[in-house]
Image (tube, rainbow, N blue to C red; front, side):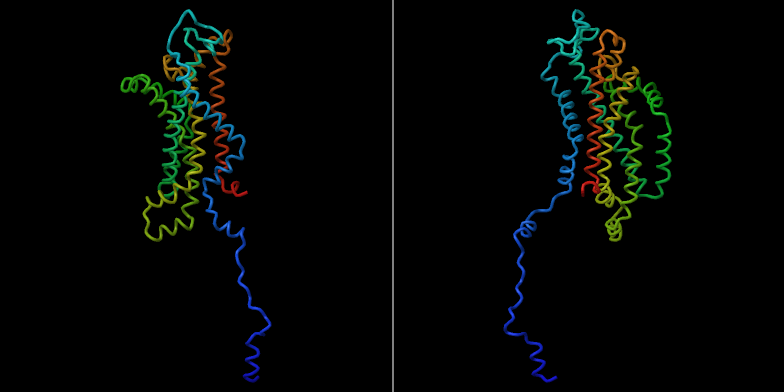
Amino acid sequence: MTDHDRTDTLVPDEGLAPASTALPTADVMEELATPPRSQWRDVWDQFKTHKGAMIGAILFIFIVAGVYLGPYLWSIDPTQIDIRARNQGPSWGHPFGTDQLGRDILARMMSGGQTSVSVGITAMLLALFLGSFIGVLAGFFRRLDGPLMRLTDLFLALPLLPLLLVMMLLFREPLSAAFGLERGIFILIVCAIGITSWMPTARIVRGDVLAIKEREFVLAARSIGTSNSQIIARHILPNVLSPIMVSATLGIATAIITESALSFLGLGFPPDFPTWGRLLFDGVDYLQQYPERVFWPGLAISLTVLSVNYLGDGLRDALDPRIRGR
């Protein structure tokens, strides 16, 4: 082959147009200009599609707003005694009626709701802290896994209600003398419920930590000398936030039911400090003559627990990436 032939082979024909550079379309430009969606935006979009969760969230907000803001609209003192108005049925002056001492049941429902919801939220926070702390330690440090999980199994094996009854009988008087009657009983009930309900959270968190600590980003952080505390704070805790949030919602329902059971058995707050469980306990003796005495607090407990359970169900689905990606 001659040099002239090589030149003819390498040089393109003059009739061929040079290849044009493809320009991005308007759709591609719009997609590139759109900022990336955050994880919490995806969670909210998925949560909105769960009708039960939305109904539960609205109902729970309505209940909390009713018990905390209602006394500003309905200003009757829940402890005011009026013997002349005792055992009255529903009326304009007393929409839920009055009890055996003439106290307004609607006012006592709102006052009792404040105590029940406060106990539920505070006990949930205590159980959540204990469960998350023990779960992270057990999952991250192998030498602590065995002892902490055996401790968890021990607490799970204990009968819950008898243990709570023993704690109430042992510590009721000392705490009441140290902090006052209402505050002492509140501290005792919150601690009793929190100490006996952290185990499911610990097991869930431990399982997630065991899986996350073997992921590439955790191994990379460990390889560059990141301390264990920094790994836990920056990489472990943010990735176990989803099960912790679900446990939080379900823990509120469990705490409210437990407090109501203790008050129903007469071991909760004294009669002067109403709770929904205490109102149930007081209304049992008048169940035949005045069934609404039991109906209203029972309905409040049922709706609160149901709304929180639906809320937790929706959060579980929204925080699950397998469902959120559909």
